[in-house]
Length: 138
Image (cartoon, rainbow, N blue to C red):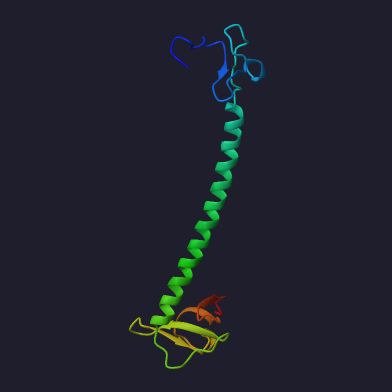
């Protein structure tokens, strides 16, 4: 189509089909057609932003809690594996962590009620060789 044969804006011509298609479009195509006004979605957006923020915050708090638990396990395992012990711990058995006079850590089978060492906590070795803190036996 040349520049001279172009139609005015209100006449809708589809160059792919080479037909005028103003009658089949879902919106008005001439200047006397009703005004198209977008729906105001502000209320819907604000409501859903609040819901999504709550959901994301809940997920964040869960992840934060899991991270804190993981770091606590890491701390305990680091302490126990750096402690002194002269035996091979058995999976599922409870051991007790103490500090000696020099503030060095050591692992023992002796429960806190049977001695007066500086008790640090009781732990059980699981199948994955991860130490799990158990309730204190004081």
